[in-house]
Amino acid sequence: MLFRQLYDAETCTFTYLLDDESSHEAVLIDSVIEQSERDSQLIRDLGLTLKYLIETHVHADHITGVTCMKEAFPRAKSVYNASAGVDAPDVLVSDGDTLQFGSHRLKVLCTPGHTDACTSFLIDDKVFTGDALLIRSCGRTDFQQGDPGRLYDGITRKIFTLPDHVEIYPGHDYNGFTSSTVGEEKTLNPRLAGKSRAQFVALMNGLKIPYPKKIDVALPANLKCGAVDSGGMPKVSSG
Ligand SMILES: [Fe+2]
Image 1 (cartoon, helix red, strand yellow):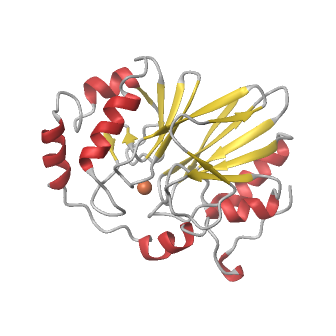
Image 2 (image 1 turned 30 degrees about the vertical axis):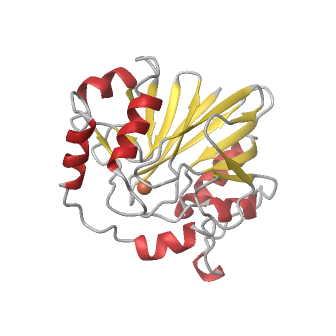
């Protein structure tokens, strides 16, 4: 399986491209609208057929590239958690569902708490955790129906129960890390290692984090799969 980790420096967002090397069916996880030309060019250069545009959650810090990428790749289908409350996605997924591309399957793991519909995706020995579990950190829980107790349950029951060697690929990193492992985060994540549920909830409720800069623009657009008026849509060549 081809695997590429792509990065948006302005919002410290990771986008992931996975491809089945025999059929060339591909999926793109958590695209960023400003990177649509980069991503579509890469997909065309590699000769891939984009099957799914997958979102781990409704982002508050950037506008998703889903709608923009669908203009370039009209056969690609947008994928959201069934409880995300997004207007008109193509595919809704729930815990335990699978998404097939070529001979590969992504398994859906519901890991709410950062938002009420956060989803992680597991494939082989990799798990894409969105903003539920970050490297040595985790997603904030102070808006978008955030709930630290649910986040603790999701991480400890769905992610920390995976084998220790499974690699963690988060939705963001602000410190220059690119991946981790389940075993590493279980023992070294300062918000979770050795913490009870009550300790974690108290820690999260005590965080003082600035309001996201783009939330007032990003949330309304992301609730419409990243649709913005044509003046705000990057020009992306057709796939
Ligand atoms: Fe987020």
